[in-house]
Image (tube, rainbow, N blue to C red; front, side, top):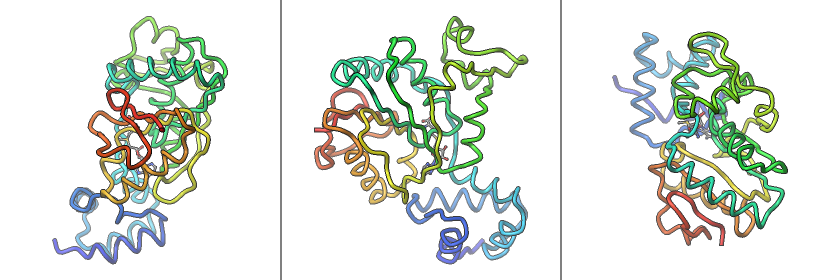
Length: 256
Ligand SMILES: C[S@@+](CC[C@H](N)C(=O)[O-])C[C@H]1O[C@@H](n2cnc3c(N)ncnc32)[C@H](O)[C@@H]1O
């Protein structure tokens, strides 16, 4: 298949508002070629026409390119380290503002809410954002499968969820109420300010280096001095001092 990605990237930016050219090229092109094949089209022009007239195809495209794999307590050991750092942070900042960026179906911000509750931190605010409106709707609904909650100990599962069926668990209101969801594109929207902690995991790996570095600089600008950034298990920030961030623990950086 010979594909004209320059045309398609421009089309997606104009019509869907997404900056595909900031994502790693080969991965993105492979994903687009796969989804086109599953739709039975073999030119990007034909695919763009399909996306224009078919909302289901459009939603499938958005989900396919943004990849929303997640789970509660993803990399449990790293969340334990983050929890320890968050509790320390709370001693200096009694009213925490935490931003969970690229939060997918909400497993990450709700994990944060559980951590706050467990540590009796009552005066915190969690803002959770993602580029994908549909996924944010699912996050607000907060009904999960066994595979999403497998890292949560059984006692906590019983405390925080109502079981609806063999494979459906509805999060209770107490945790749901703690998270405010908003649509936000890390590549073009204005960032949150005065954050004490930012959790952004498993999304910058999809960005090209320039775009990723810009995101890290903006996160640094969003943090108060002493605030922390928690990244994904493969997202080491090289030369983090260049962004005003100091590594203080595994995948945790502090604003200098
Ligand atoms: C692999 S999931 C990671 C979810 C969660 N942070 C975790 O680690 O479990 C990546 C998420 O990034 C979101 N995303 C992709 N591009 C984005 C962008 N430019 N701005 C904001 N969110 C984006 C996707 O919609 C998806 O929900």
